[in-house]
Amino acid sequence: MSEDSAGTAESFEVVVIGGGPAGLSAALNLARARRRVLVVDGNRPRHAATLVARGFLTRDGIAPLELRRMGREEVDAYENASVVFAQVGSVAVEGDGFRVTARGVRGGSDVDVRTDAVLIATGVTETMPAIPSIRAYYGTQLHSCVECDGFEKADKPLALIGETHDLAERALLLTQWTDDLVVFTNGTDAVGAGDERMLAPLGVRVERRRIDDVVGERGVMTGVRLEDGTVIERAGGFIRPIWSPALSFADGLDLDRDDEGYLVTDAHGRTSLPGVYAAGETTAPGPQQLIVAAGSGAVVASAVNRDLIGLSLEGAAVL
Image (cartoon, rainbow, N blue to C red):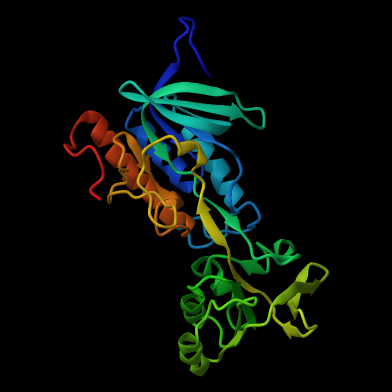
C-alpha cells in the first residue's frame, strides 16, 4: 500500500494509528460518515496477557483480543475503510496534509500514504516493577485495572504492588472489594506516613520491604516473598505499572504533551497541531477501561468529520 500507477502516494481522508478500542471505534464511525479511512495497527496490544475484559456493555467477559478481532472485521466490512498490520515509522507534515509510513508486520503490507488527517490511538507501553515472576501471573491473578477486575477479586486477601505515589488512592479504591489488602511499595517511599495512617483503620497494611518474587503453585499465585525470605500469603491482586505513551513515531510533529508525556487535546481530541487528533490512552489521564477508550474514539471521530467538512472554525486545541 504505497504508490499508485502514476507514482504518487495513495491518499486517504483519515489515517487512524492504533487498532485498539479507541482507534477501531473512531474508524468505524468515520467509515459510516463515508470517509476514506485506513487503520494502521502494530498488533502489539498492551492487554495481550489479559484473558477477560470486564465492564464493556453487551461484551462483559469477552477476551480483549477477540474484541479487537471483531472490531477489525466490522471496520473492514465497509468498502471505504481497511485495517492493515504495520508498525508506524513516521508521520510527517506534507503540504496541507500528512505522510504516514509504516513497515508491515504479520504479513501486512508496508504503508506509504498521504492523508488529510491523522488520529493517534496507540495507547501506552507499560513497565512492570522489577520482580522476576510477575508476568507469569499477570492477566490471571494479577491485574492493573482496579475498576475492570476488582469485582472478581472480592473478599480475597489481595496484594497491591507498585512504586508510584498514587498507590494510596488505588488502595482506598480496592477497599470496596476487600478488607484484607497489603500494599507492597518494594523498598520505595510510594506511600507516605500520612496515607498509611489514613489506610490503617480500613484494615490496609503497608509493607515497605523489598520484594524478592511473587510465588505460586501450578500457575496459581499464593503469595509475595520478601527479600528476607518472609512470604505473605495473597490470592492475587493488582500491579501499578509505569505507563508511557507510545508516541515515538510522532517525535517529528509539534504536539504539546503534559508532564507525563501524554498528548494534550481539547475536549474533542484535537491536538495542538491542526489535522492531528488523539483518542484513548494516548491522552491524559492514561489507561482506562476499554469501553471508555471506545467512547473516546467515537467522540473524536465526530470532531474529525466536522473539521473535514469545515463546520468547526477552531483549527487547533484550546489549551
